[in-house]
Structures are given as C-alpha cells and as structure tokens.
Length: 72
Image (cartoon, rainbow, N blue to C red; front, side):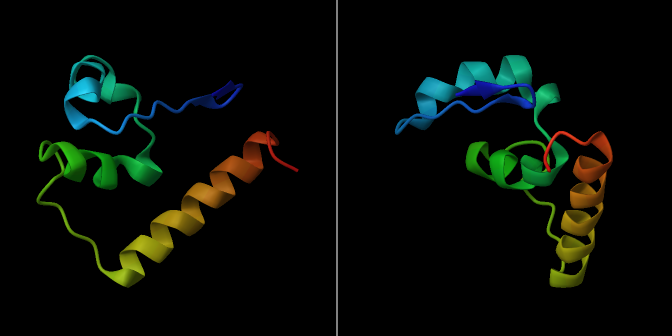
C-alpha cells in the first residue's frame, strides 16, 4: 500500500522482510521503530519505554502529523 506518507510492507515470513529491513531501516518512522526493531531483534530491540514515555511519544508524533496537514 502506498500514499503520500509512505509505504507499508507486509509478509508472514520475517526472513522475506529481512533484506528490506536492513536496506531501508533508516526510513522506518519513529512511532513504530521500536516495534519493528523488536521483530528483527536488532537496533532498538533492547530499548524499552514506560507507558508514560510511549504516550508522550505518540502524542508528539500525532502533533507532528497534524502540523503536516496530511490528515484532516
């Protein structure tokens, strides 16, 4: 799927996505980077955030998206 905000790539097999992850991981958006890195057990894999930190991060990201005026 693609729109002006980016592209989501799906697979039932982690090994299928691994080459894409390694080639394009700099493009991963911050709001789901920890989750994706956890899937591949790399980079921020051992990084944990508290509920408060996650809420703050999601709120900040939501404000940034609103500022872009991409989503009404």
